[in-house]
Every structure is written in structure tokens, then in C-alpha cells.
Amino acid sequence: MSAPAIEDGTAAAAAIPGSGMKMDEGMSVRKTSLVPYLQVAPLTLVLLLFFAIPVALVVAVSFFRYQMLVGLVPDFTFKNYVDVLSNPTSWSLYLSTFKFTLIVLAITLVLGFWISYFLVFHVRNLMTAIALFLICTVPFWTSNIIRMISWRPVLGREGLINQALQGMGITAQPIDWLLYSDFSVVVAYVHLYTLFMIVPIFNSMARIDKSLLEAAVDAGASRWGVVWNVVLPLSKTGIALGSLFVVTLVMGDFSVVTVMSGGLSGSVTSGMFNDLQFLNYPRAAANAVILLIVVLLIAVAIFRLVDVRKELVR
Amino acid sequence: MAAPSYGKRPWTFYVLAALFTLFVIFLYGPMISVLVLSFQGPSAALNFPLRDPSLMWFDELFNPRRVGDVPGAFSRSLPLALITMLLTVLIAVTAGFAFRRRFRGATLVFYMAIASLIIPGLVLSIGILVTARFLGLSASWYTTALGAHLSWTLPFGLLIMFAVLGRLSPSYEEAAYDLGARRWQTIKEVVLPIVFPGIIAVALFGFTLSYDEFPRSWLTVGTLNTLPLEIWTMTTNVTSPALYALGTVTTVVSFIVIALALGSILIIQRRRSGSS
Image 1 (cartoon, rainbow over the protein chains, first blue to last red):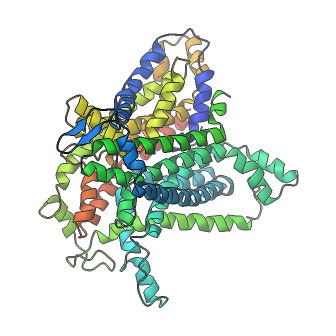
Image 2 (cartoon, one colour; image 1 turned 180 degrees about the vertical axis):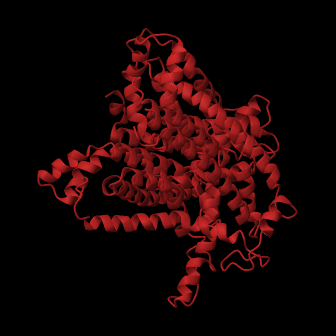
Image 3 (tube, rainbow over the protein chains, first blue to last red; image 1 turned 60 degrees about the horizontal axis):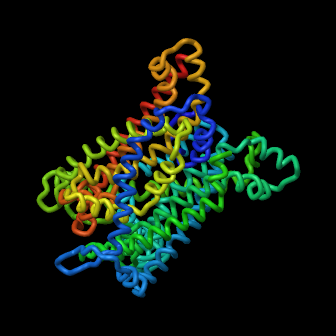
């Protein structure tokens, strides 16, 4: 392959179906040996120690009792869950998180789809396409917090946009809702997470055999017909993976919503954040378990919708 | 439209090219404004215009009188990112090879990795902190935070290895064996050259994801901050362009790492296509 391998790297997210294929065909001809077990042992160990056990303990602690000054008291109580679920604040936090998730998902989907479409089907030179793709992905490797803060001098009361609007005489007063508002939260999310949509969709689209599109055109399909009936269905694995990333990132975020709303909006995790500051671990854990269940349900729904499993064994 | 028809460009091309251009401006514009404003003069204005450009805010960073302990945070973030990178490469690459064969529990490990990737960072942070408490350990950047970072970088590394190894047909190795190559010879002469650019990509992800990680570090670093946590504290405390100067410094470090990685991949690709 002449394409720089970095393309493989950044486009890795969409590799799951391919990888599954390898899992099953692979070298199964050879005798089964200990080798794969030894190879996968370090990964399994780290995941057990820093993922599975911690999650199990969060679940356990969510049933513990919290006592002032003492902290954690082992118990089996549903009080923390009742606390969280009977609190109207947590419901409004979930509602606001869902609202942001849906808005950001919609925007990043449209942007991710059409930018990938442009790169794959409109840019005729492969090297140009890869260069443009890299331009889209480089910010991924830089600090999220800095990228978030960088909106301040742009959107602020005395920021670039307000200066420009007033300079051109479009508005007399600076616009206040540009920064520290729901608007700026959405802007920051789109800025940070569109890459997670572009990379897998680009990867899916790049695998589409271009002769399929020609065939569709020859068969009399319209421009939109080709996009709707050929490109869209064939990029659904990428769309699903991108959506999975964006949804879980927005659902689990607290820094963007805190900084960009100026403390006006919250997220599910910022509720947890508050509990943690009062060292109320059991309630934070109950909150965490609820969030985890919600996120996992969404993930399962996405995996079901696109049937990644079927593609795994294909 | 569609496929390379090499005729007149359809109108959609121009619409999408405009969209792409706007997106790139959207992506880089704010970063550039921070870069410019970090050279702000003593007026301490957080907005444009830039007055009396100077390096004073960079100086402030390294002589921490008013801002936090930036050099200290950097002296932890850098080794942490390097250790994470090294472990990510070693563990993810070997695990990637395991998935080329059938083994019991492959699906379980795979889904565990995916779950580790999508779990909200703060949730996992709480879990790791609680685990450390149960074990009687205190949180620190080189134990709990390292583990937290690995839980994030390893799944990424694994996915990259899947993409890379998907291109490595087992028949290449079989051909090498048939031609009488020994095991290590096959790895050195056949497998490694094909996989190497992918390994660099894994290293790039390992370094940058750890270097910039915030939610998974928040509870797990213990008492001494890493750089993203220091920046987080500064976003609320510091109202001078020193914050922008720090943003410029970290972004420059990231860009150096990205350039090193992409540059070495390019050199390898060129050398390979030159030799074949």
C-alpha cells in the first residue's frame, strides 16, 4: 500500500469489523497453543486491574452507607439510588445532558458525513485527500482543555466576533449569549468531537468500491439517490462507531459544560463532581452506576442497530 | 458526480469544498488566536488587539510567582506520557497479534476493551481511587494515574493494531516459513517492516492521549498535578494571558510529537518504496 500507514492508525476506530474477521479466519489452521493467551495476558491484566475491578467496586460502593466524618460504611442499602433518583436536580441534569447529546450528535453527524464524503469522493488525488484528512485529525492529538479555552477570546463580550460585528455596525451592543451559554457549550463540543465522527466515517467510505457508484449512476440513480441508497448504507459502520464515540464523550463530560457554560449548565457528571467534593462516595458511585447503565444501553442499542456483531463473524 | 469522472466538477464539489474550508477555519481559528494572544504585552488584556508583543507571560510560566507550579506539572506529565507510550506499544502490539488467532475469551477481552474506551472518565476515576483505597495504596501519577491512562490508551492501541494487522495476510508469514526462514527471521524481515508504521501510530496515540488526559487523571493523580490538571486549575484562577502562554507551550509540545511521528512514518514509507 502506498498510503501512509498513519491513515490506518487514525482510522483505526472503524477497523472493528475487519479485526473480527481476523479473529475467526486467522491462523486457526495451526494447532491451538498457549501463545495467544500469553500475548493477550498483559492487556487482560491491565483491563482487569484498572477497568473491571474498579467498575465492580464502584457498583459495590454504590450500596454502601455514607456517614459524615467516617466516610464509607459497608452496607447493602438502596438509599443512594433513591437519593439520586428522587432528586429533581439529577433528572434535570440528565435532561440537559440528553439535550446536548442529541444536538451535538446531529451536528457532528452531518459535518462528519459530508466532510468525509468530500474527501473520499470529491478530492481526486489520493495524497491530497490524505493530507486534508490529516489536517482534520491533528487537533485530536492536542490538549482538549486548551482547545476549549481558545474559544474565550473569540466568543467573549470583547471577543473577535463581537468586535467584528460592532466594527461593521451590525450590532451596537456586544452579543452576550455567544460565551457562557448553551450555544458556546455546543460550539465547544462540536469543535472537540467532530473528529471522532470524521475518522470512522472516512474509513468506512474509503472502502466503498467506486465502481458501485458508477453502476448506480448508469442504472439511472439520481445524485441524491446514490448518496442515500449506496453511500449511506455502506458507511453505516463508521456512522455507528462515530455516534458511539460522540454520545459517550458528551454523556461523560463535565469539563466542557462547566467551563463553557460559565457554571450555568451542568451535566450528569458534574452532579457526581459535587458529591465527590463532599467526599460522598456512595452517592457519587450510585450516580456513576446509573450513568454507566445509560451509556451501556445506548452503546448496545447502537451495536444492535448496525449489527456490528454480524460483521464481526462475516 | 460521484466516482472519479474527471469531467467538469459538479456544483456539490464547490459547496462541500466551502464547507470543508469553513470547518478547517473553525478547527484552527481559535487555536491560532490563543497562540497570538499568548504574546500579549503587559496590558494583560485577554482579548484582541495584541498590544506591545512580548514574551513576559512565558517568563511568568517558568517563574511561578502568580501562576501554579507549571514546571513541576510538566516534569510529571512528560515522564507519565512516555511511560504510558512505552507500555501501550508493548501491550497493545502483542495483544493485537493474539487476536489473529482463535483463543477462548477473545470476544470477552474485545468487549472489555471497548467498554474501557467508552466508560465516562470520571466514573472510572472514582473506581480506580476506590480500588486503591481498598488496597491501602495512595493515589499518585506513577501508579493509579498510569493505570487510568492505560485503560484509555490500550483500547485505542488495540483498534489501531486491528487495522494494521488486517493488512498483514498470514500467507506472508507462511511463505517466509516455506522459504526456510526461522521464526525470529520472519518477524524481523517480514512482519516488523509491515507493522512498524502502525506501531509508531500506536506510540503517537499513547503519548498524546496520556499527555492531554484530564477526566481520568482528575482523582487518580493524588496530590501532585499533571499538566492538564494544572491548566484546569488555571482556567478558574488565572485571568492573565499566562494561561494562553501555557496553551501555546503545550500545543507546541504536542505538535513536535505529532511531527516526529508523522515524519518518521513518511521516511519509513519512502525508504520502503525506494528499496522495493
